[in-house]
View 1 (cartoon, rainbow, N blue to C red):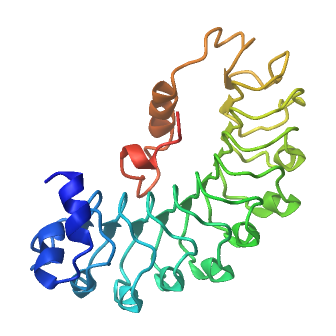
View 2: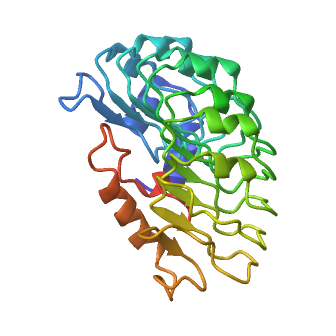
Length: 278
């Protein structure tokens, strides 16, 4: 069905039209996953909330701007994709999904995140790229189990010092924000494995040799005149890097990171919308 037809039908609230968009969801899927991405949805289909054993729910690339309170019934949900929608605020019902591990919020209209997000004790992967953030939301520094965080392509100029308290954080994507200097707080985070500051305004990089956990630093497309100094064995992507004379394609970098994280539980789904921007 073409997107134009779906877009027209999405405006018709009748049950038959909504079922036409989402298909028949009569029984709990065997794989405990529902993917309603790219359906031009404007209203969340309530019958999904009857699948209380659901583990993965993908709602990417729709026209949603709200979620019903009944979503709280999905207490076994571990992965929720809300990227590429029209959310201006994160519905608080999301913060009541206590088993949630992975949350995609990229490509929306968010300017802040609710403090209630800290009530998600298992959240280890959060993506907020391509939104309207002008600073990092305070609640981010309260997500003590966060391992992967992507905040690229927002109007963020600096990072809070409290970020260093996220001692489980391993992968940090800050591509295409408004950094004019390398964030000093990152120098106090030796546990970081991947740092991406691609496409910023950094002219001078401090030495990163002391970051004992670092495996990959991406600094391409900054106005710097020399590569950051790193410890032996750390891969660099950008100009003047002896071990990478020509910057790798982002797809190659993603593959390396995926291999690096294969041993971790619940990897993010390999979806185009869930990858760092090229």
